[in-house]
Image (cartoon, rainbow, N blue to C red):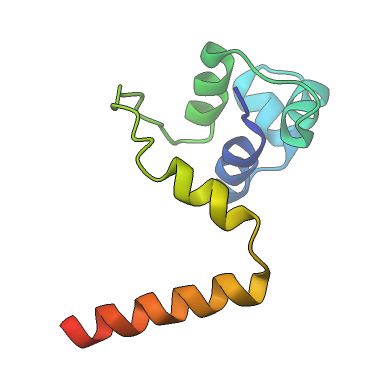
Length: 99
């Protein structure tokens, strides 16, 4: 599990330093730092524990996988930035006309 971004966000939103999070969670600062750097992935239990120590929760629910846009995303990945921007602006213009 990639916990770097949510762990860092939870800690900073809670106004905690890594040292302070160590004190409230009982998890070593060095391990917290490695999680936040993405060099080590926490277990699901550790991930939820550190998030909760920051005063947050991440509800884990099963959601059916939607791969309906995968082919389109793969094709768009090869377009230039300018072409993708033009397509987005065209789509936004179309949706603006509807509403």
